[in-house]
Image (tube, rainbow, N blue to C red; front, side, top):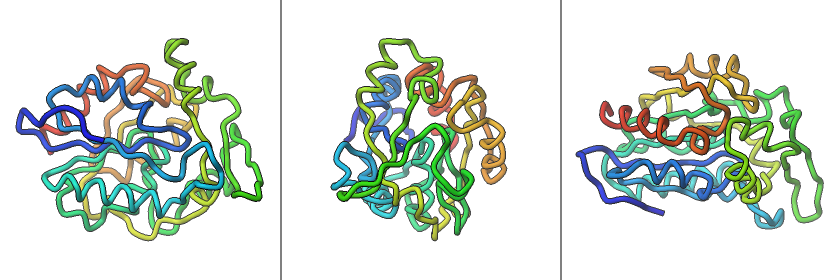
Length: 237
């Protein structure tokens, strides 16, 4: 999905949501990115039907296709798990000027979402074994994702969450885009989903580091501030 006409001479922006989330969660941020050619993708690893969930490599294919469709200079912002398939997808994407990892998993080859989380899903999630396919959900999403989000917005965000394909969490990165494409890491310093200390370790792999005093979802709690940060990154890309 594309919103806003291109202006200001800035690169286009592709937004990649995290696990359990959908593009709808990013709309408050999209609304603040006026004048920027903004696109969102829907990752197939997240959805409401375990039988139709894709995996991490399917996510990477969707991201690569979205970036290729933009054609011109592009910055990709990946949130949380979205950093995994973004890293997988974009090593050879010639039009990507920078990857922004927002409280994201900036993984290296051979790592997976679960392998860097102690070898299993996060402690605040639950695994479900199903004949239709194994999947993971979140037990306390308001506390984990939306600690600083107003209650009305948080409730709406919870209602939009889906399941995550278990396979997506197990599959390892085989292509590493951030070794070829410049990257910025944005640390969320009040994050309960991905601890800031872990983010700081990932951030050492980035070319620059920014910080925002927010929980795991600043696109909902501080969309205007996050949009200013992104616009500055775009201007320098």
